[in-house]
Amino acid sequence: MSDEIRMLRDAATAFVASEFPIDRVRGMAEQAGAVDPDAYRALVSQGWLAIAVPEERGGVGLGFAALGSVLEILGRALVPGPFWSAATLGVPALAATDNTAARDAWLDSLISGERRVTLALQEGASLPEAEAIETRAESLGGGRYRIHGRKRFVPDLRGADAAVVVATSTDGPLALLVDLRESGAVVEENLVSDQTSRSGTLTLDGVEVGDAARLGGWDLVERVVRIGNLGLAALAVGGADALFAQVLSYVKQRVQFGVPVGTFQAVQHPLADLFGELESARSACLYAAFAVDGRTDDEPQAVALARLVTTAAYHHAATTSLQAHGGIAFTWEHDLHLHLKRALHLGWTLGQSADYEAVVARAGLGI
Amino acid sequence: MSEDNLLGKENDGWRVAITTLMHERANIAALVYASFKRELREVVALARRLTKNGRPLSEDPRVRSRLVHFYGVAETMRLNNLRMRAGKNAADDPGPIGSIFKLIWASANQAMTGLAAEVLGPEAELLSGPGAELGGHGAWLKRYLRSLANSIEGGTSEILRGVVAERVLGFGRTLAKGAS
Image (cartoon, rainbow over all chains, first blue to last red):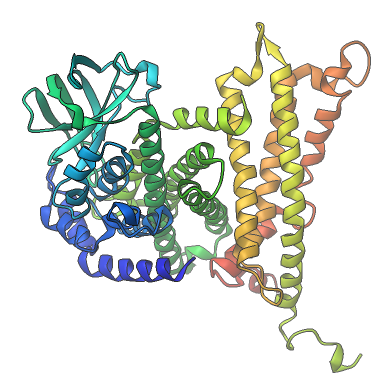
């Protein structure tokens, strides 16, 4: 780990500890569907949206390994709000596009947190293949398009200024930036059981966009999805880490039959296995960050694997921890349910495990 | 025997012995990864060769999902190994990752050779005669049966979980006290 990343981690840890104690997090989580603008402003004031943006595009150029280490810390503290989608979907889409008009119009204000962009890709539960996208961008000539379709499971949709809408056209799949104030763009919130996350449905009923909206094709979409998945993996590693530390401390204190329950092998051994799973998940996440930063030649399978093993490990950490705690962790007052539902939510964000198993099978095993 | 022969400090023999074993495991880790990865390639090749209703088994979603799982085990073994070596200098304890290595490998190797035997079914136990070459004249079944010793030899999985619990998770030597 470089000194810069270490300093960033220390600063982020201190900031999150002072700004996002669990009581504030629970307070935010319990406002169904709401977004706390102060919380997001506080996060972006740290300059973290600039971390992975190259210097020549107005960022800090520390790379996605550095951004991942910040997301891990946010995941550990269950910090709600749209930081993940802004930092790993919206900002990267505008930083990666070759469309200079769009970049000039949006990127600086996204990095500063003044405006926010999310990704509207899915139409069903799965991560779609390019050919399966049903949302259509009809060419009107002169670089203009009219978009019809319905996008589901759009992360942090409400309150976003624009969405990168993926649509099919006669030129193949396109990533089009749609200002959500345009007429014909209808934003609806879906309440989800993970109280720390927000999701919505975007209906596009003949929204018209011009040349400046065309960010790129399927390559850009795939790149943004990989970055988003690295972010999910980092959130999952952080959350699992928090659960593990918490359960270890609990079973060393909780006395039953005159001794701490942690003295029993029946309690120790599942936690020893979980430790192995969490270390493996952390290794996969670190490697995926290298891959996204262009330091390996196996990015698709490295990222897909990291997403698979980290979200599975987070889920497993939550269920193992629940069992080791006993009934206390099944209560609303205990934080465990927040982690458990978030672990499930992360595994269902940007598609499902089966979608990424297919990527690993193809790219990693050639089957 | 003179005091000069004492390794480490007095009453510190357990730590010295275990640290030595950890170094051994750290070295074994690289070998184990290589053999697991090779075996995975062989199981993938087997799944491509075997067919069900005219389609290769590697296209069966359930088989493919399990092969992906083993790919993940192999990859994370490799990466854990890299992390362990990056964090290690010769005099130190190779650290927590070293102690879980063999534990993970033993169960994964059992499951992977078990998958090979399972997809072969009755072909797996043919030692000779017509068609016995498909299962390598019993080789896959033999690998599976041999793998069942992996969680016993070189420290049983229960002992290793105990080592992780005591030395990594900080549970203390609860059992040793009870036994003495």
